Length: 249
Image 1 (spheres, rainbow, N blue to C red):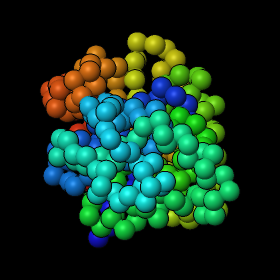
Image 2 (tube, rainbow, N blue to C red):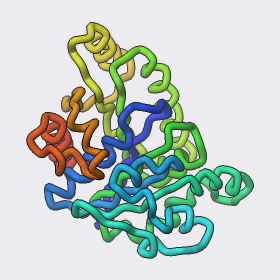
Image 3 (cartoon, one colour):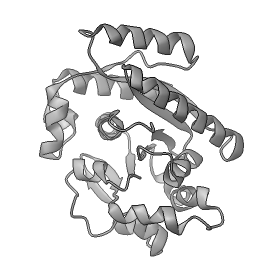
């Protein structure tokens, strides 16, 4: 049985994509699932988060130097990681005239999909060929959303992108759900935006919310998921609950 592949995607920066990819992945691993995380952001935030900032190779070596995934793969917290660094930014220019440029990631990872139960892709905060590659490869998309007004415009953009990819490149692609993150009910706007999401987008919204939590902010400083750094925190509990939810979907 092949892995369920999920892109964590939003074209707006600062929406918790990397935080969600790491902590959802670690939660799935904590629940006994075999998980691969793919860092597809040239900023390498996921790679840095997990303490691999000085890794010798990155996913760009699979694309440019014909290396195999096993040659660059790293492991931590009972999961596996395909790291990224700034060299991935060269992909944009190099693939402009490349035939099948939207399916490079799919061709690279499809042969090892059967080795995992879940593959999570951390996408860049831009509309780019890397984002298109992720959406062409995966089965599902999770969109982390901050409950603030500026998030709504970005949400419309990424939804349109997903539907466009579904129509032209990946007919099996679907949105698993919108994930409210950095939720703070002390602000009136939080409930207003959440109601707007429910009433205007017609998309599934996870009933699990990731609140504002200092522990989740501190965890990357120790190159750990919040699951390991603060296992009894509200954020750890929320991501574990999200993982359980996804396992049953």
